[in-house]
Length: 105
Ligand SMILES: [Zn+2]
Image (tube, rainbow, N blue to C red; front, side, top):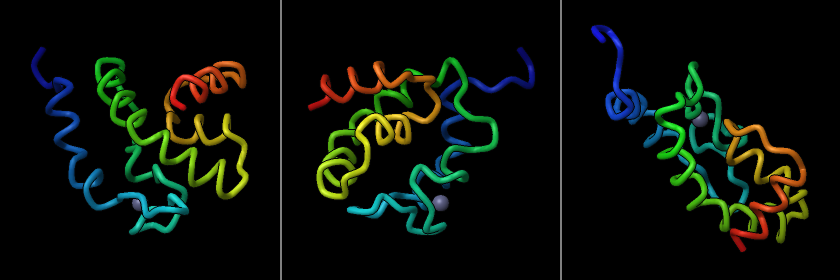
């Protein structure tokens, strides 16, 4: 439909934020905002569209193991909290987040 963006175009629009607002390990703080990554600018105003969710989930899940090592194993944060932080756009119960953590590890 005219005026609507496809998922690729939408992701490309956000690309400058994805590239600049990257996480610095081991704290997983945004290198620009110095806030918990993914920061608000990285996440974008509109969140994740349904047709982008699969790509976004695959990308973020690829980072999740390292985030769990740094934030949960090394810094003692709750693993389900770390999972929910990285996969912020998914509504995950503690049980869901724990299952994902076990699958990832
Ligand atoms: Zn940022």
